[in-house]
Length: 170
Image (cartoon, rainbow, N blue to C red; front, side, top):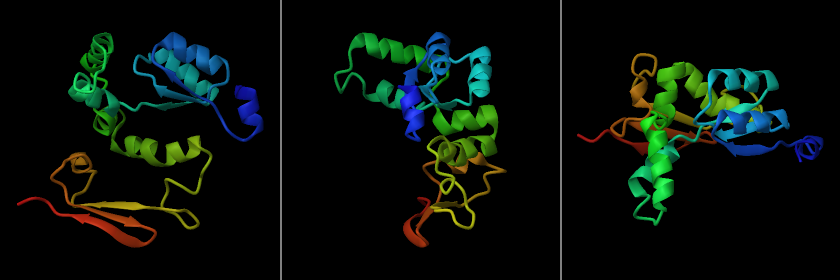
C-alpha cells in the first residue's frame, strides 16, 4: 500500500500509539504517524531517519476527557484516554511549545504540515505562497500564551482580507 501511494505521489498515515506500532509502521513505509502518544526517543530517532512525520493531535484527548461519558464513550476507552492524559500528553500546541519552544511548535503546525502533504506553497509567508494570517495582540516570543489564551485579541486575514476580528473582553 505504501509503495502504491508513493507511486501516485501520495503517502500513508497510520494511527499508532506505542513504539512498537510506530516502528512497524515506519519500517513498512508509512510517512505520517498520527497520535504517537507513547513515542520514545529511540523510535523518534528511527522516525527522523525514515523521514516520517509525527502528527500528535493531542487536543482530542482533552475533548474525550470532558465529553466522553456524555457522548457514550465506553468506560474502557475513557480509562485508556485518562491514562494518556495522566502522562501529560494533552495540551496540544501549548505542550509542544513547552517541549520544543514556540518557534518549533509553530513551524510544526504550519510549514512542517505543509511539507508532509507535499504543499510547499502552504504554511509559509513568502512570495508565491498561499498564506492566511493570524494576528495576535502580543509578542509570542515574550509570551507564547497569547496564541492559546481565550482572552487574546485575534485578527484573521484570509486571501488578503480581514475575515474575523475578536476583541479582548473587558
